[in-house]
Image 1 (cartoon, rainbow, N blue to C red):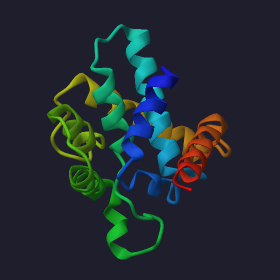
Image 2 (cartoon, rainbow, N blue to C red; image 1 turned 180 degrees about the vertical axis):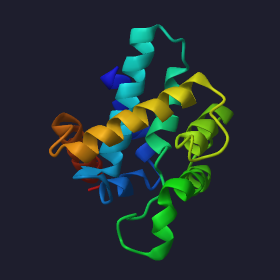
Image 3 (spheres, one colour; image 1 turned 90 degrees about the horizontal axis):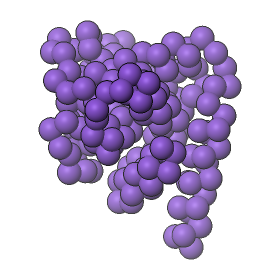
Image 4 (tube, one colour; image 1 turned 180 degrees about the horizontal axis):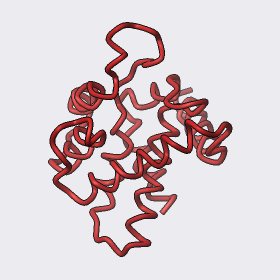
Length: 166
């Protein structure tokens, strides 16, 4: 499972702004990219435990991009007060600019904040990301130093990417 997630993330980092998600904190001390990867792992685990048939690649891609809004939502700007309601649309717009998305991936990104977004998810993968996002947000908000292994993996991957450019 880890190899599939890392492979997909590496592929997505080429010619995109995905690595910029490392710079912004999501909840607590968790960078946005670490959060999205944790959400993907959580959703995959739920699907496996419950025997839910999914399109794994689309769940991984949509899950990694579900918070692709690319700004610091803690910056105190007045419009950030409604971030929970508006960031799915911003993430989708950015993702559509940088990637060719499937309908399932669009649904994951656009509806992961249900019920804050009025329309519920259409696909199983979107429901799984929606639920996993809430589980991970609680974990990140109530704890510190969560996902050390994911944070190390992202740092190593980013270093490899920088080294390959030299």
